[in-house]
Image (cartoon, rainbow, N blue to C red; front, side, top):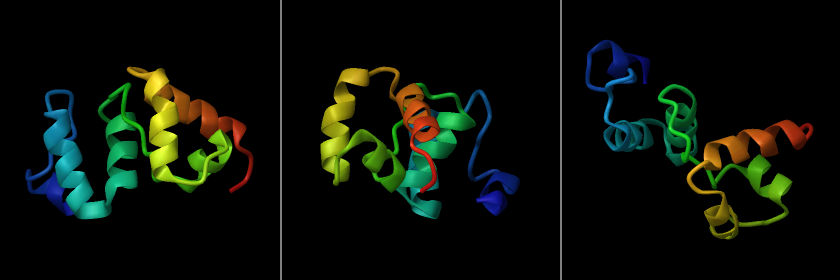
Length: 92
């Protein structure tokens, strides 16, 4: 990821295209990391890493699909819901 940012193939600045950055990050590090980075670094308020097992446990569901369904009602602020779940979840 650092190499891609350094050589310019991945942009993580305010003018970056969110979808392009998410796709590049997903290719480099997987969906969970990609959504977390765009949520934090690019301030995307609807980014939501549903594959995160801590989030699933905190929300009381067992699958990423079930968490995505539950999180639909939190749109367009799912990133804030994720932070709330992480902070209230206790140790992993």
